[in-house]
Length: 187
Image 1 (spheres, rainbow, N blue to C red):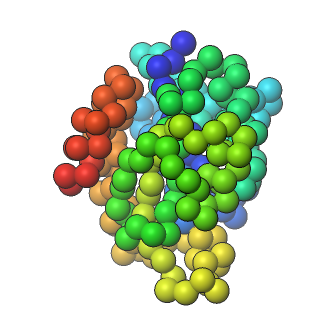
Image 2: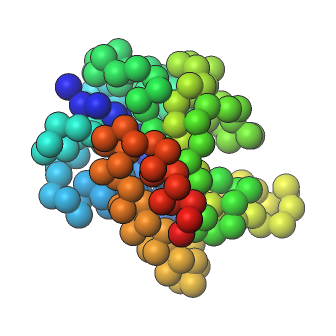
């Protein structure tokens, strides 16, 4: 049985690949590919998942739209026997500059509909890896912004952030959340 589950939020369908809202899902796909793991769609839990070769981490993403992520995470919890505190949700965050990473324990949804779905379905005692996607400047443009693709200059910043995230995966897998926060937040 895995020690933790890292879930990336994102929308299904090719048209959403590489969008700001899909950063969590895209990162899970990238990490698992980089370490040679093969994600598999599982109908029963309405998610695409894989367990790391050392059996410590269950990687995955819901097969639903971001705003409906809670049901999938509930099913993952039920079938994996993990506690909610052992779930890490990777999601986009408008309130952080592009590429900024923050680990947060618990809290509210901050207007993020995916987090709203998760919190209303399973509670809020999970960890979040907030990935900064920047802000368009006004509320009117938010939907187009989160569903838009990253600029080449932003992709460069995100690649560095992705490697910073990769550097803390083992700490997260070992349950060293505070060490992971320190390492991540000091970069």
